[in-house]
Length: 119
Image (cartoon, rainbow, N blue to C red):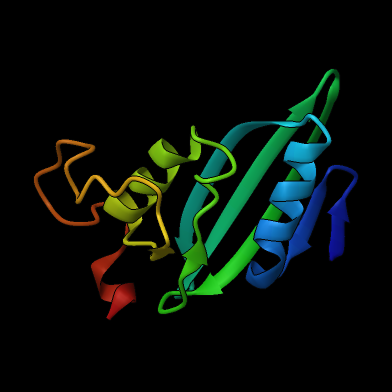
């Protein structure tokens, strides 16, 4: 784990589930998951809060590598993960509930990803 700022840590995708389970066991709540696609990689930030503390974990992964779903640990992740898949094409493995690209009404596939950059 690499500390980028006081409340931001860069972690490996392989460590994500362990960290999420530790946060859940310690009483942290999932605040949000934010995804972006830059330079053929997904930047995904997972944010957690407990009382007045706030912490973020950043996962950077190549476009062809799946990120493990955390929806079995935090049910609310279902919505974030479906959004990440539909808007950015982010591959999520072992999703608890896969809405099969029916979560958001969009006219084109993965509209938030630059098609030229993705090729």
